[in-house]
Length: 287
Length: 237
Image 1 (cartoon, helix red, strand yellow):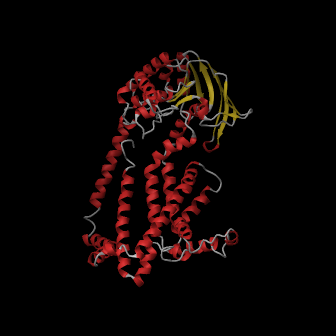
Image 2 (cartoon, one colour):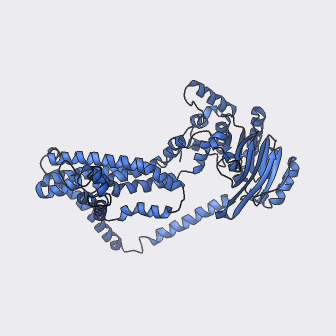
Image 3 (cartoon, helix red, strand yellow):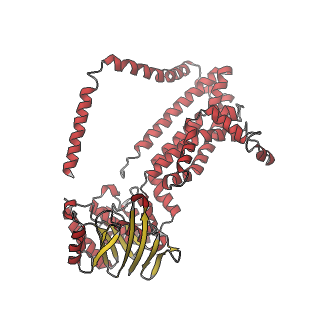
């Protein structure tokens, strides 16, 4: 054991030394610095531009109280909260089953659930219309029940759910997979029911992963644009979320668009910090 | 009294378990090389593995009987299960781990009971440590306390000393023996180390998913075990 450990450490050191000697000296500095700077500029400049523009504008905080902004804030807050709640309620059991059970069609279901993450949002919008629209698959049944989904807040939630909820399921599944089933078995032999075992053992142990999944899901829902505009439209106070309000603002109220953009930039940065913290929480005292 | 006769196939591992044993010994040991089916037997008794065929009876109570369609859940079996790496809940401190299975975990009666159990295993001063802050031996004591506080009909131990180094192993073996003498619980333990047989009053020797020998005399069993464990000595160096 001791011998093996020291051997692998020595090997690691050799590799590190080789990497050090190989890295910079043999590469001309410009070949590294040039592309890197360009890369950082392409990412950094737009972010800087938004913040700079807002800093120059007059009373950016007051702009945030204009009706177009307040309404969009309200619509976004409500719809993303519903989307997140739906993702947690429906996605958590699904993620757990995907992590713990193998069944026919497992791989297929897995791919289907990951599809929205790579599908162009416009295609998602078309799909939602074909499924829940008036002439869609469920159109007749929904009409018979007196329900019309397109161009309502429900449509916004469905569009966000389609695009964002798979991110939660994927993260939650990985989080559950990282929990050793032996802990659950021990809990069962201690007389604790499956449900309470899930609540008292599995969820706490998976929590950092669940939190980062929920954060990613909420961020994706907040930024959803393509599927929403196709399936829900952009009606002030009803379906116009923050990203849609930016788009509308570009034509009618540039200051508002700027203010919302800055707000979302700051908010996204905050979310990033939460994500970082939740990833770091994977190594608390007990890990 | 534990009676067990089970068959199970593990097609993905190209392995079949087919064992039959009965014992009244307070401490029975299953010994054999790794992959010989000892752990799967133990897990079948705990209810973590469902045999394809057979029957498991503990103190006259049927835990599992395929032909009668009986398969008690792990919760209903009242067995204490201590897996190889003890399975302590890393997010709970020692006291919360020990009290985990109590019906009423909070309030002073529970705290008292947990305190008494911790004192029994000599861990009362570390009640608020987390498992990762404990040594291997201390973790084992907590795992034993967590199982024993519920007064199980039998304690199932999977390789209880494998994670510990040599000197500690002997000390904990003596400790477990002493604990058993005091609390008088029954124990089924799985091991690949012939020295663990000092603890046992009866042992069953496993090889290739079958029981190839058994003995109520530990020295005989140790000799038997070394026959099916050609590398038993080398494995521990």
